[in-house]
Every structure is written in structure tokens, then in C-alpha cells.
Image: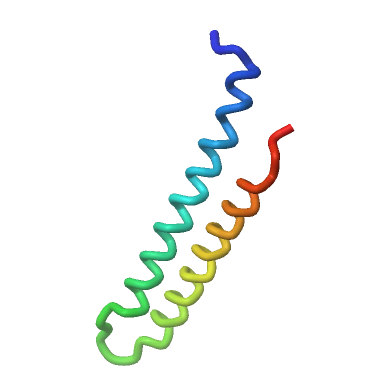
Length: 72
């Protein structure tokens, strides 16, 4: 069985890595949606792209802020 202290020290880093990966993935998909060719009116697609880009940037900002905090 793993030592609980070891598990607690490693777990936040894994969670932060997942947050960063999700932020980058969302940012890339948002850019693809924005730049991807559409057929006809693409206002809805463009707006969805902006929303995804903002969510991705928010995740990356959350990652940076969480990394600056010192673990207790």
C-alpha cells in the first residue's frame, strides 16, 4: 500500500498537468473551429470558437496560478 503522504504530494501535480493539457487541447480546438472553413454563415461556429479559446486561456491561467502556490 502506498504511503498517504507520498500520494498527497504527487496527486496535485497530476491534477495540474491534466488542467494544463485540457486547456491546451481546448485552445487548439477553438482555434481550429475559428479558422476552419465553413459552409455559408458561420457566426455560430465562430462564437463557439471564441468560447473555447476563452475557456482554454482560463484553464492555462488557473494552472499558472496554482503552480505559484506553495503546497502546505
